[in-house]
Amino acid sequence: MARSASSQTRSERRAWYAALATALVLSLLPTRWLVGWTSDVAQLVNVPIVALKHPFSLARAWLRPMPDPREAEPEKIQALESDLDAARTLYKRMEIENELLKERIALLEGAKLALLDGARAMSSSADRARTMYATVVGATPASSRSPSSLTLNVGSWHGITPGMVATWNGDVLVGRVADTVERFTSLVIPANGLNGFEVRFFPPDRDIPAADAPVGLLKATKEGIWTTDLRQASSPAGDIAEGWIARIADERWPQPSRGLRVGVVERVGPRDDAPLLKRVTVRPLVDALRVPHVVLIDESVAIPAESAQPAKGSAR
Amino acid sequence: MRWGFFLLLLIVAVVLDASFTQVFAIGRVHPSVTPALVVFVAMYANRSTAMWAALVAGLLVDLTTPALFDGTRPYHLIGPTILGFVFGTAIAIPLRTMVVRKNPLAFGFLVAFFALGAMVLITAISSARGWYAGTVPPWMSEEGRVLSWMWLGSLDALATGCLAVLLAWPLQRLGSGFGFAASSPWSSRRG
Image (cartoon, one colour):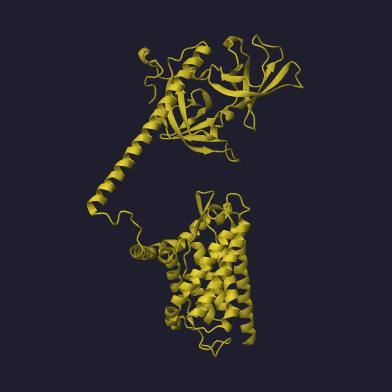
């Protein structure tokens, strides 16, 4: 009997120390390990408790209501002031929406203007450009499972097609729409994940003919930048240097996207294994994962001649 | 001790803390009911039962207190209140032999000590957790300094002690429901 009581005490003590150790370990676990499953466990307790909280909350609100600064005023004045507050809120909401629409129109117009300018620089026309505004609703960084991507709030239902070019701030390349477009969403592959497209390099401080600009084929690297190899012999436009701007000059890309700014030359150095070549490193002009919205461009829809003016409704 | 009765009162206490005790708030200081219940058990039950009751109460408080990781992702930190309540009970148990159990002021005094001990341990754990990325200790977002935070916690403990003085009488009336052993080995004369 005594032995049984002592073994019960011993097992109880063991259980107690195990419970304490578990509590200690749980309280010191890194937070990201607790996200998710702890909320599920807590739901088991919280769901029945929430029902009990309602009467106590009502009792609290009855015993100690929210102070109302208009409490002393007559009821009519209280009602009028409430209406006035509601009207003010509505007016402010309209003002904010108006500002956002203005920004969106300016962005679309800027994109159109930049496209026209870029197309002229590349000796082509932009009369077949189609632009579309989209908001970035998700940005997935690169992981061991997948490369980085942007999710847009528009899809095939809105007219998005694979290969459309996403731009930021009028003329900066963000990326291209992936091959599969969902009905209401689409994925954009960031520019620094795109490989093997042709660009021309232009100096930032002077204007040179596109035909004289050096041409390179950009190759993406793991670091999120591009490299290309150019011949050592200087081009008619002079030697390429840090700060030169790379612009799309690939015939396989939609015509309106040619001339878009892609990146800036970060480094120019010799190639040890090929003395006649120099290695050019290009860094993207914009961090695609931080872009809040984009303008998508394509060439598939012809625009009537009278609406080729940049300000007129190319946006859908 | 009758665990079913204790758990019922514990749930009521936790719900009161979450939804009702703000009625007694003075500025940012507001009292809690759960520590009073745990200390009441610690005054009458044997040591082992009192400790387990503190652990269960701490677990329930942790499970009903959400936190945010990186400002957006909710989670529940299970452990600090458990350890805090167990530590507070470990402080209250030696003191119970020195006080008159049925005296409301003595009860309030013990509850305030319990709450202070629990607050110190919970602050220590929160401070250690501040090293993790994305985990901000509560004083970083509110008071700015740990000492200000602890001062506020001390006032909370004092308020909890004051509320416990009021709760002493109803808890004494409910005492028979707990089914505590008739004679307590530490203080048979002071019952």
